Image (cartoon, rainbow, N blue to C red; front, side, top):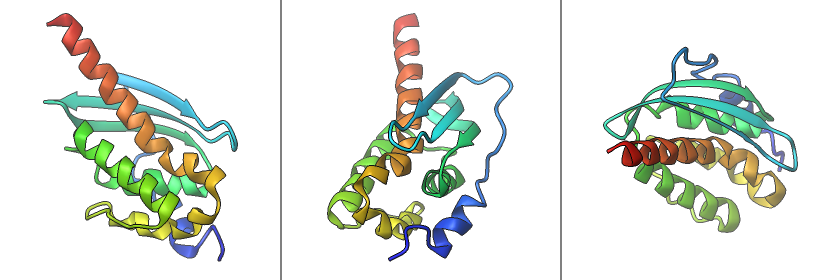
Length: 145
């Protein structure tokens, strides 16, 4: 089975966010060790939910496709939703149980990646960056209160 299916390539070419935010509440840059994919994610947060996204991505098609699925539905998402999504995506990549519901059901297209464990970090990169960014913001708010 080919890793870069037509679905993955189409998703990779349709990332809904391709520019940085001018004044983000938080910025996180993350990189995968094995393939060198990197993203810089800018978020604005309102009421503990993502309200605006900026992105600079230099990643393989897997990382780009994952970013496309997530960012299409990121606005209004909170950290609990992203943590659950990451847990379910990791389970799917590791063991094949697909527990992800809409609006993120597009992650089903990553089934070929199950056979390539060293590429899982690329798929998880956007979620890891989003979680880190939301944790930073909640940490900042906690300290200032």
